[in-house]
Length: 71
Image (cartoon, rainbow, N blue to C red; front, side, top):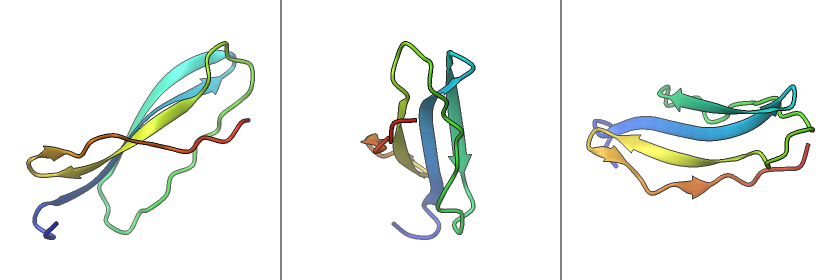
């Protein structure tokens, strides 16, 4: 991908906070930011998880599952 096309990454995740599963989308548009930290708590009835997209000026890549550790 050329530098002109590159728009960064998008994280589309669901995390557990105070017993509620919360949708938490994150855009990482700075080319030097290659990580993001979530606080995922135990106690939700559904598992936490998410997918990663690369973003470019024409759209998004196919989603890639994020390996998710247990809280």
